[in-house]
Figure (cartoon, one colour):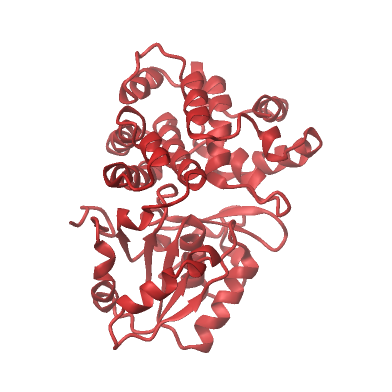
Length: 376
């Protein structure tokens, strides 16, 4: 089936079989396929290659890091140019899709990646990119329908690129590609999707359709216990379908913005030594921000609780902590290698993050420090 969304994602079990048709529909004959070493090592690159018709000539970049970097974008772009590619496929998790979006951007834009970041006033500089097809293999980021990408720049900052032109030209969402994903990755990615839905609902931007989509995603993850089921049994097709839909819905919902959870996780994700997983960070930080925002979101917590299948007066932060424990996530940032000595640098990064534009309660510098300490 096709979702009735801007880039009309092909969403169904087995949808990957449509890849040649999708490429041909968008005039791509020589795609650069951006993926990561893990997928390449288990033969997923070969699977993609075997599905492509003989008329197509793919090239591969298989070195996408866990948090995509400006250097990796430049390395992939070099392969793109050397092989006269005419489009890009992001095949993997959010990192591969974000890297592919940025390669598609830089393939026909001048300058450096950092020039197009939100922080550097890059939104208005982004025009039509080369065609880019997104194929997620995890259920978390929703990058297949979002208009953003997050890249660690050469100067060490983890920055957002955002433009309608960065939304993938098309998307293939095949839940069967996530079957067998290890529990730890399923858990982290799933909390990424849930955090997107919850932060989007909390955003003060008025967009009832996007908010309704976010609430539906929350229902799929929590009320239907799809995340717990997917972590417990990686072959549960119904749970995997629900989680991929919730992931896609999360990105549709955060068209109305995110918040302080993401400001903090972007700061932490920029650390190239810790190499922390973005979705896991979101899940660990979320309870802290739920407590911080509690009295600043009107009746939204009651609506989130109902979507979760809980009493509307429930302690949402506590419920998320219980969910994190059930699926095996760390209880705090300290368990992930974060120390108090890092906090001043983390606060400085968080205070400049564009996600702050739609947080319901903007922390002061002192409050940022307390938030990081509480999340420890």
